[in-house]
Image (cartoon, rainbow, N blue to C red; front, side):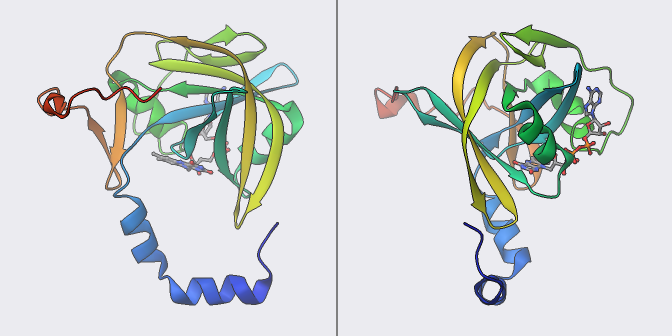
Length: 180
Ligand code: FAD
């Protein structure tokens, strides 16, 4: 449910946007491209607001700005693909954020009933099972229909910049680190 206008204003006053962005950018993430197939055409959008939602049933979650074209496309398709980008695919992250620096030619492949980006670290195909208003974004919950992995180094996002995993910093002395 969207916040009432008065509460939205109070929230805005309490948390300066610059501070919000600065703090949220300190949460390191991967970088994905969310895809939707509409009337035989595929559309992509860069997103880092992705997470695994549930193991049983297998659910995942993406948060999409209500003002993004992808928002209406997801409502139309009722399905989405998520491609976790590799280090080599940083130009695609910029491209699908509408910030292309140089021309890139994305290559799509099919995963079940959706299109995903070829050469990604991991890909997911999901059917939208619920949505939830989240201020100026909507959270889309997808029931995972298909998944696949490829062995590439992942692309990361931290402090508003793209980054790569430092292989020296795996903190192996902490012991078992498998949570799934
Ligand atoms: P458009 O602006 O139309 O699409 C984006 C670009 O992709 C355009 O240049 C378009 O030409 C190109 N494109 C689309 N489909 C194809 C295709 N089939 N072939 C070739 N090119 C194509 N926003 C969120 O809402 N949620 C997030 O979690 C989020 N995370 C982000 C993380 C990062 C690291 C960055 C850089 C941006 C993030 N954004 C996020 C912002 C979002 O990516 C941009 O606002 C984006 O431009 C919105 O796209 P759109 O759906 O409005 O579509």
